Length: 292
Figure 1: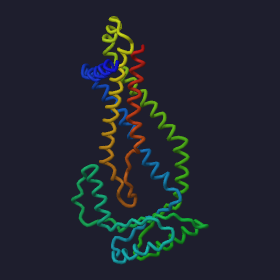
Figure 2 (figure 1 turned 45 degrees about the vertical axis):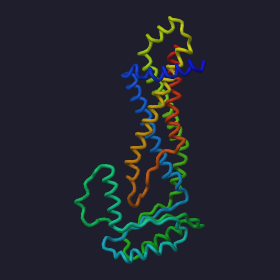
Figure 3 (figure 1 turned 180 degrees about the vertical axis):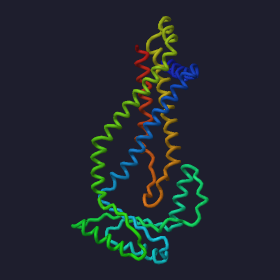
Figure 4 (figure 1 turned 90 degrees about the vertical axis):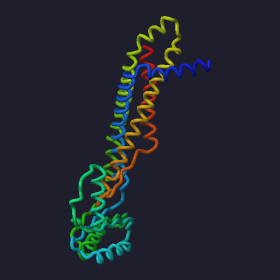
């Protein structure tokens, strides 16, 4: 019995090469559907990390005048460490800011930045606080007054209400985005399932002949189930590989001040889901198609 099952499994693998054109189009359709779903999921994951995990934080972007003395600016940067509730400081000289920006532009689109001479960007500092004062408004006013009073500072961009933004995003993601992702998973399942079912149309004659010669149902179905599962598996793996290549190309696109955020790849459990869903739907769709 085990030998028969192994032979049927081997036949299911060989059957993929017996109908190359139908299998190729099926594989491309599955790969595209999984890739688009993964791309949307990756965008949501990064947006959720950027907004949903920022609760209780206040971010200040400090910009100095272009002609500010860098010795004085660096001494001011060192003094930031004494500010209360400060959890992170990122500083950029004009040359560092330009290097980061041009590097990102070159990596994502091959933009020629060789014509840029001296950096037109100002010295920049991004300060992240986790304040816990009783009076947030007073603390914010004092922080703005201190930073504005530093010699050479031109302007300050402040985001002191990140906690409200995070709460709003968490409500939105819980009530809107996650149901949308669930619907997307359902659409992905239907697309993969219908695609694989259509690919079995080319094998109707073969199935009818096997029925006529008295082959049992499990003998007919097992190779087809294996073929459907393999199509889903290969399509899911190819889509995941394409998604990883895409992420590797764009992960540093926002790595410039004051954003300075590196995109994250999907968590392991979500990658596993992108591979498992096409496999399960491939098997289920093949079963439904053959059963009919």
